[in-house]
Amino acid sequence: MNVLVINCGSSSLKYQVIDTDSEQVLAKGLCERIGIDGRLVYQKTGLDKEITDAPMPTHKEAVSMVLEALVNEKTGALKSLSEVGAVGHRVVHGGEKFTESCLITDEVIKAVEECNDLAPLHNPANIIGINACRELMPGVPMVGVFDTAFHQTMPAKAYMYGIPYDYYDKYKVRKYGFHGTSHSYVSKRVCEYAGLDITKTKTIVCHLGNGSSISAVDGGKSIDTSMGLTPLEGLIMGTRCGDIDPSVVEFIANKDNLDIAGAMNVLNKKSGVDGISGVSSDFRDLWAAADNGNEKAKLALDMFCYRVAKYVGSYVAAMNGVDDIVFTAGIGENDAGVREKVLENLTYLGITVDKAKNDATHGDEAKISTDDSKVAVYVIPTNEELAIARETVALI
Ligand code: ADP
Image 1 (cartoon, rainbow, N blue to C red):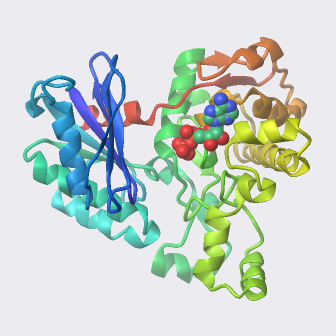
Image 2: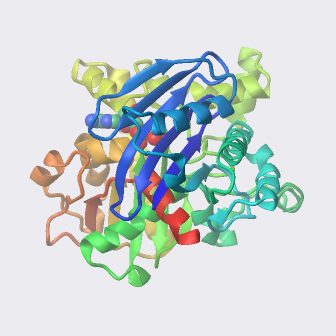
């Protein structure tokens, strides 16, 4: 079956069409600058990318242009839209309501809307994308796949914050975690790859990308993860600060005369390795600057890797052991230097890195620890679109 996978951001829409029998991508691309002007990037597998500038006042026009491109006479990946068997939508926040993916109905849309205040930028965009597809593709079954769902197995001792219980009762303030589709896919895939019994395996997944998070997966279930109520908690990221003393918010707001929104903007958009280095949020730029003697870029890399290693250590404690550690996403898959620096702090676990293997691994599945390493370390590229397509087919 052909599944259209849709991932709507506030002003963007990423899409792929996946033939789930062969698991091949037939076409992919994105719409950018929705609500500003509008640009469609479309690529049928095997052909060059096409870029078309066209007005996209809302996500509806964006979806409409994607569907037209998919059935274009010359470069379309499909003959007609009837070849789309289902649509899988990435939805960022499912709150406590969604513990797994589900078929989209009017009730589901209402329940997603009720989670809007937990993800005010993302969930409304996801709903607009869902409604646009329902209007333009009536009768095609649609599935919602939630970033938060995989982490709903966390126990209360992991997801509650040390603040008055009333905030949980009244407003559901708690840790939710994100990147769930990736943590779920990678923790399953590593067991297939390494021939491990998932029900007996303790895995730590390091999803290191522009947004980064770590999860502790015990017996196939997430028992803790580093992101929180929002994706701001946990690791130091491209532009997000990760864990800090909450008093910093009041302190910088007072000093710089900012309101809460202004201070949060600093922590979300101007912090992380970008804010520390003053160079970039991209790790390729950070390494280049560090190699040229930029001390702040070196510090940013050191801080990033140190925080990852500390989280891994804490999740060994959370699971009372670990069998394997997996690196994934843009940095985790490609940056051998980051992996090496993180693993230098973990030799106490009996980890020995196969340096040649680590240095040679960029974006492929590989074991990067030696055979006698007490804990195995792997690189497993994530594939959230394929995971969404699989979930979609499984549900319909
Ligand atoms: P997201 O999905 O959160 O936008 P990705 O998982 O695609 O992010 O990761 C993007 C980041 O990965 C880039 O900002 C960059 O820091 C890093 N990255 C990508 N390719 C490489 C590479 N070859 N070497 C080092 N870092 C890389």
